Length: 583
Image 1 (cartoon, one colour):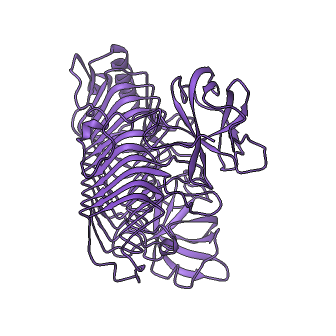
Image 2 (cartoon, rainbow, N blue to C red):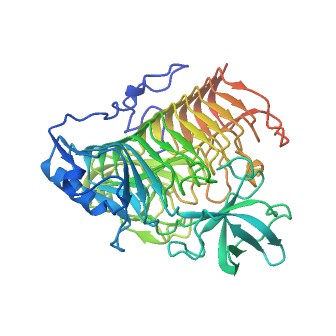
Image 3 (cartoon, rainbow, N blue to C red):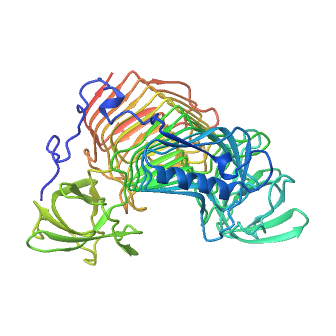
């Protein structure tokens, strides 16, 4: 068995590894974000027929302007006049309004324009294979909004249903963009966006029945756990999210910047993508529009399989219906390994390796290091270098053979190893952002070589910063060289079941197993600094760390716990860690 040892990784970090209490500059993790491209030619949407404030569908004209600018090459700018633009997608097969393909050096400058999307299943823009591209300075809203809101007027516990009177300003559940079995949850009656204290963070409806004008019965999928879970007068939201497009979709892109974009709604994620590098989200805001009870339907920044990670700075995220930031890699599973080191892999939708899917082109490259992770032990038991790419899911590997101890292929009857490409999901900066009153996690991180600094978190229903693999999803990996510095956290962690987790804490780092929930490894994560953070109004614990080798805690301050919950015994708890320094 070839266990990973500290300091011998083939994918050694470009920046200095964590030593003592030093915090390296942001640009030691990755290059600074793209903020400006020299202008060579300007394409005004008004020249293509898009007229602000006329109440007509401006999408065809905008699409023509964007296409012309994309053909012009580097230095082209699409420019809008100030004012309001209406966007309607007439092609029912499309999930987005605007498609960018293989752009290079393009800028789309909203110039302060306001866009109202009239097609509530559509995302705003889909980007594929774009590089050195900027989208900036615009406001995006939806009418109708892609969710509905209402007040519970009756609860039937034996019947497992709630009756909801929909607000006059909200769409009705029979609108065509709603899927009857999509999910719903409760909003705090006093604080828009924030989940009701002690309520589940979601439930699915099984069936919706119209009882009278504006009143609907939601038969719930999960049994109502307590009489006080759903009560008359509670605020209830029901999403139209399944099968919808996200605000911005990002695939196979490099060095794309989203700058000073305000959004008040999104059918799915806000900035979501895969297989990309250097995605920059700067000064963007996802806000709750006055008079509404929540903001967008899904994650603000959601990136999967990114080689060079994001730079997110100066953003504000409030009232959204899922994690504010989630970064991760889907594991590979070993399908076959020959004596000469030729290996075949699949991706899978389940932790046991079932529901196979092929790898994406370029997901694994020559020279990449693959880590074979035993989720039960919480340890990497072997590593291999990709010597040659034979196909998108077949590779010649160095340093590993079928004789290596505990190497498992699919179908052997044991939980298979999760295999992570350790050259991706790394190199990131998340700094000076505000996260407030949203569902689930603030930052849900499964990456390496980066910094989470100067952020504020308030009113998130789960952990503010959670660093752990999620082996049953499955996704990961565990982390290396992570700096959590100078963040302020207040009143996070209050959804149903939160305090029952062993890992419940405002800042939580641990390793997750497929069958036991926790592992006993002292080296799943490595080189983590938690410094100068301030936590108050905490539930569970303020800081929890487990399964970390080389952990430093320095200068953190813990205020009073939440008065609404009985705290665990210790506000800061460290266990199953090695080489721990505290001061």
